Image (cartoon, rainbow over all chains, first blue to last red; front, side, top):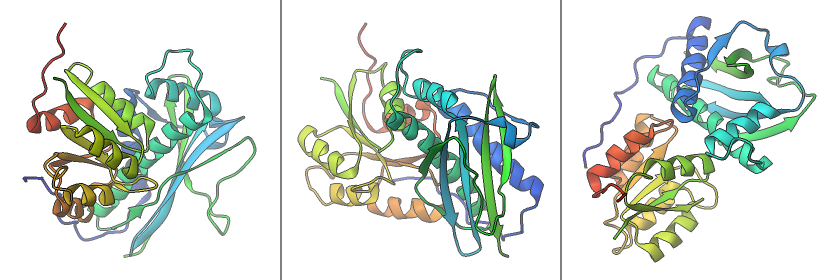
Length: 172
Length: 127
């Protein structure tokens, strides 16, 4: 058996805002490009206006000795359905079930969260992600306990927009 | 005779990707959505290779892999682990139980075919 193993992590240094944004952007772009052949780009639009109406949100947490946090990915219902049709290789106007949409959105969140968690481990912040869970609705806010808002990054995919939220606390 | 590949993953999206990856080859891709189903399919069908996710409900991939390796009939089947984490500790754990190779999600179909193709003989589908 000859399996290539990653190197031991380097000594941890606190992450600055630029590094955190780069982490979220790189992970998201890579997952969409690799799994869906979709190019997504960061957008400067305000997160509050990016996604409206019926929404589908996949979230997960991650935790370790010196880092804890969570990540979520928020889509409008219509875009989430369109992605499910693409991901499951269905005919363009095919009907997808809520379960299928949850599966696709949840797995995308799993991959983005896993990528971020792995990168944090490389930087010295060992952590393990949880399984994702799905929230649906039209009128809700996502916050940390204590009323802290996560960093929210808006992405554009052609005419569609979605939000990746990342909250993280690192301890040296 | 077509080769059989078993895809064990709770995500339909990932199983769809595995099916698509091998569409040009003379093979049948069987599917299971958790380790318990995966073991049942593997016992019945004796696949030539297994592509196995780690985190699944009912029975996870580590447990399924451990059971595969303790069964003298199923032990020789090469297993390719899928993981969303590339951390050293996670990979060492599965390497110790005995996987042929691993892929970190997200992954390209071509990489999956390349890795599985090193272990089993994939023949192009006849026109």
